[in-house]
Length: 88
View 1 (tube, rainbow, N blue to C red):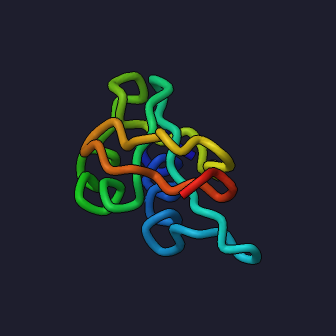
View 2 (cartoon, helix red, strand yellow; view 1 turned 60 degrees about the vertical axis):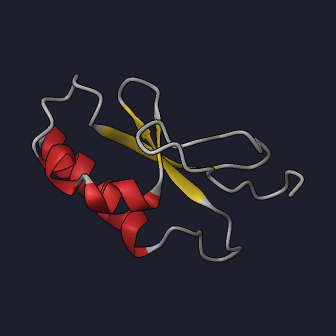
């Protein structure tokens, strides 16, 4: 599987399901440069993710749950990524 297809599959999975099942925990994408990406940016920046070179900051490496970080923000748009157990 190429970097582009792996990255795009993960991004598309987040767009389809921004919350885990079961549990409903909020997910976000972890990029190759360690950045965080919200589900909305995975949708709007799909072309950048699909054409990533693998070391340009757009390669989605994994999906993760934001367990307690109430200050976690998307590195692209700045939106707060909700936490599962942090204070609201």
